[in-house]
Image (cartoon, rainbow, N blue to C red; front, side):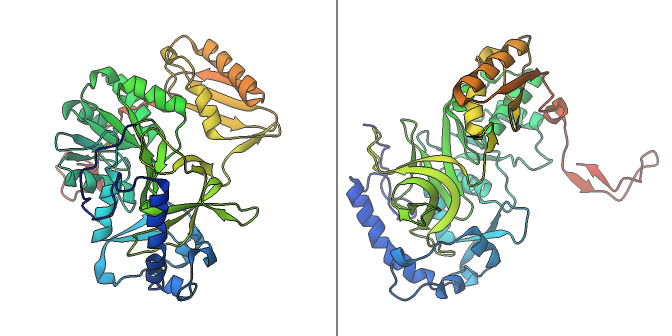
Length: 437
């Protein structure tokens, strides 16, 4: 049994892994927190109308993302405005945004949860943050948590023109970056960009681990990223409204931070809510101040189990199976992205497949894979055979040249931030309103 060392009291004063010894003790802690959580929730305009004084969690209905959008911007606020430290919004393209706000004390809790890593961040580390900043929580959270742990932070926002892929490769190499925080897909784009720049990933020997989140990852893709970068992939699961919800243990299983957030499983067919099982994830944060949430339905399909693990953390395990409504039907069978991804990354690493795409047609799955070398025909044939044998659907697989699915220009462009300019020399084009800085 491997338990992460308990460093003593957390910065937030909230529980640390090791403070409870059994699932029974964990459940007692959760139960003790519910009454104060429900009481505080009634301080928000939204829950004041929904919760009765003294009401228990069992009588509470679901809170949905639409409730947060309808309460934009501060209908969920349960503390005075002057106590807020930050305001955020989760990504979305329709209607009102989904708001989220945090007090300074909650930021200490966010940092506590972020640094629950089997490869911890410390003063000797340089962390490249390659997650969106802007209004999204994840980039700012990693930045702040790593700084509080003494690390050097490189703010490489992945949606900034100031940090194109050639610059990412240069930063990884020249700064001897030891840790990265990104989506799994980003780490593969770095591979292609590094190769394009003549720097194979094996030359980045300082890298100790890749922290990833933001999208599901199959076991095969995780192994491929670890093999290419010669560093472990440490996965995290969370959301902008609450922050980190789960993370990997030393044995590669994802555990839910159930000492900070109570997880439940909702069955939309029956309307039932259970402590574990398979269904939509429903969460009740146990220490949320600015924006308490009661049985908030994330609409993520998960499998949640309270079961023993060799790590000894005594936290439930969680498998994220996808988002409600995701997946496509082919030949009468429902397919998910992770099922196809698993087979793509089981192809031999020597074939160099990093990028792929698939289209679900009524009677077959059409797949394209980028193959940089001469093995495209064989790779496509093997993949098609695997899909038909393991997923039970017809498959037409094709190999396309390198740079087809991820344009080479994307990996080589040197775009930079655009800065206004008003004064031009006699030989310059003053028809340009901006220039690259």
